[in-house]
Length: 395
Image 1 (cartoon, rainbow, N blue to C red):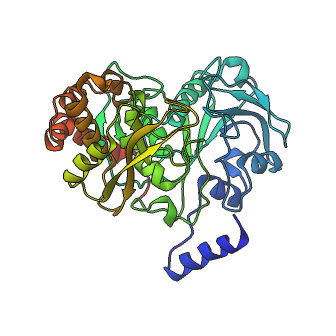
Image 2 (image 1 turned 90 degrees about the vertical axis):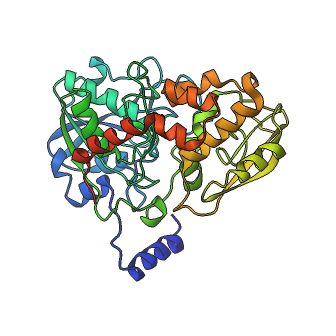
């Protein structure tokens, strides 16, 4: 972060009487790495693993005199977070020269060979608060591997960037768990990775020796831009807090025959397709009077991904009131209008892959208004809210 921006963030926090938010790695470094003292450590991380001062978690652990960092693991998008491919090879960290083993290639769980000689497996990656964003699935698989090999698992916690209060969307059906839905939680879970690790450990019966190095100064109602922390794009197409907030609803649509703006400057802030009538859809969505968002017709030509180099007609989203905006309600209204206007022309079967809930899909296909869609999964969502309470670490 430029010095001026860092000073501005510090001044704003001080003026508001707020304490700066410390991430798990900040707390770990402040406490002289005592939870890892004398340990041979493997670190599961990527480019988002940084301290407030900009130093990477790799750098901090590698230079800590009482810790031996011997191995690094990387998730989807690779250690630098720049790859958008189906298979990522192993490599070497350029600064430390420590081997980097990819968990998005031949395996998605560390193997016995990869974990040989390790005492503790550490996780430090920024999540974005949506079930199908795969970093939390990689964490769960790594926890299982650590449990199988009798080692500790330490999570260096980070804020949920879209706040830790709002919980919404259907819970995954039993039997539909996958790498984009590792456990039966709602689309927007409202938890940090440390809290999710506690929930996974108990509810998936992992039983690993788990320690969470918690955040300091973070309040559940805070969005990322209230933390004073540096925003780092967690993946190539997640470029802003606005896109992260839209993602729970808009991301659900990308397995269907729609572009969600990949291959443009504003992924998840637009949707479209060559077959879509953008003016009509924008008018329908504005007529629904969804809180906190406005829709405008647009045209765009992605230079990559779905409909690359094809003219797409669609809709652009502008969040007008973040406090009132509901990404799941918005996403369901879009899906509902597509089902009503295009029928089988919108490939709704594919919507189920990330949605993970058959009854909700049927309600969307039937053109059910939002209140009826919500009623389909309200009981399971309420049960999740109760389940999650015992795993929460912050207020």
